Image 1 (cartoon, rainbow, N blue to C red):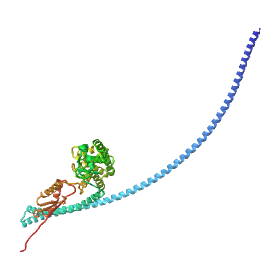
Image 2 (cartoon, rainbow, N blue to C red; image 1 turned 60 degrees about the vertical axis):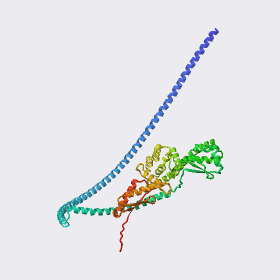
Image 3 (tube, rainbow, N blue to C red; image 1 turned 180 degrees about the vertical axis):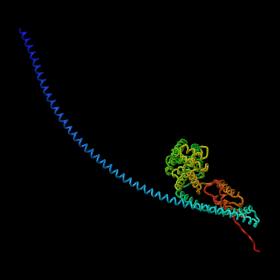
Image 4 (tube, rainbow, N blue to C red; image 1 turned 60 degrees about the horizontal axis):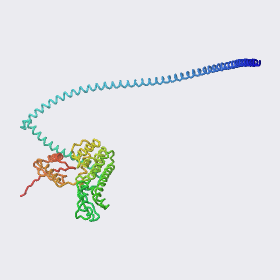
Length: 527
């Protein structure tokens, strides 16, 4: 019974709970529906308001746009009207200008017509005068023929004989005139060319005053005392033999007090031997092992010194871009001589002179200095490689990719090939100036005498030459001619011919003066 009651109570409670839930759901649903309907109504009102405002705004903007468009159309119309007025004004001006040009053209046509008529009249007059002139010429030819016949009768000579006599006379007169003109031209040419060349060379030489000293085949090393000679010789001559073997230089120990002479044709070896001896003397330790060690050190130092000398020469001349090996070869020229003249000093002097001459002639100065410095570069290796120093220098320059103009200048500076560029002529002239300067080079007696004999032989080989003398160390040749064979007019031509022959036959620095002397003497005795 109690259980039944409980079950019923539970069922009633469940039913009541379900009924409460259903009632709550219904009430909530109705509330939400009313709330939503209210929100929808307010949203529709807001949307209607926004649409109305948009319509008003669009209408206002449309009116503003219409007004702006009307203003722009009005402005554009005004601009078009102004441009049209300007164009009309320009058209009127152009039409007026064309009208004026047409008037000028009409006037010119009228003037040309008048000139044409005048020219036609003048042409007719000229034709008449030409016809009259032809008639006069025909009469003159007839008169000349009659006069020639009369002259032949009076002179007793035919026309051909008379022509021969006249031509001989004219030939003599022309020979005299030619000699005078040649003399005049040569005088003027010498005055101008010699003055210009003298000034240019004088400026170049004055601006390049280098010091020179003659190099020999021996070097004297001073000693602190004569006792040092014995230490250098060593026990049984071991030290001196080691020195000569290591350096390749002959040591001459004689009676000269406190001095040893080093003899060798190779200046590099002599310099190594000199440096070695000075260090050994200063150190005091002299034995074969020390000698070999010192010689090797001095060789390395000399190589560095050569490099520094090359760099100094390049920097002093303002030359850049040379190959490092080429700079070393330039430094080796310091220990090369040619006819007693130091090769590096000579090369630098040629470089300076070439640069100065190039500046006067409007040629590249840097290129001229470069070619002048490298013109004797072959002498740095000429005893090691077969061939002339010119060809060796050309090969070296080509090896190190030098400029073609520089290579040509090196190749042509002794006349091995014909100079073709101004740079080649400049280097050739600078080399001759440096070599020909008094005291720069020494010439042996045999070659000097041979050059004088060649000059006299060339001058004596011409017809009419009685005697020829080479004077002033071969800088002048004086020629005595026979007065009965060579005339006054022929003296000038003979001097020029001999000068040309000397230029073709001999190689010489500078210039040679050709002095032709003709003397006529008349001797009579009063009895």
